[in-house]
Image (cartoon, rainbow, N blue to C red; front, top):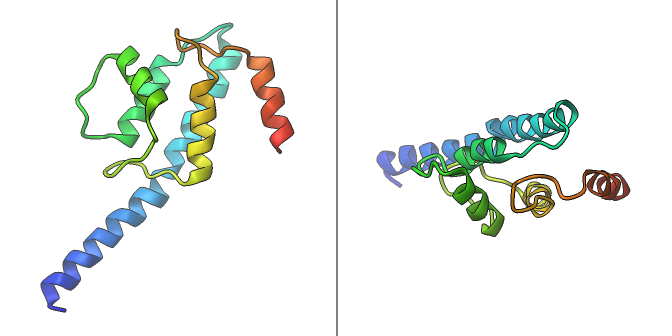
Length: 121
């Protein structure tokens, strides 16, 4: 292997590690924000929060319409090549959260969702 190839490989590996590890804090912040919104507002919608998550997963996308973003995330496999890389457990949590939202991006049944999550633990 030439030095250029080694350097290029190291840079790519470093990018992957940053995507996997450092950006994970943003996932924790995302779900903490969801919990806080649920406590503060009686029936919040989560368009803004999902737009933040979309920006983490797909940082080079130019989508702005929150309803389109919600629809795309809901139908997505949540795989990102350039943004936050989620492991299977994280994808599962985010996917279940997305499925728990109605067409207006509000929780369908907060109590049922919390009960299901507690039972999973």
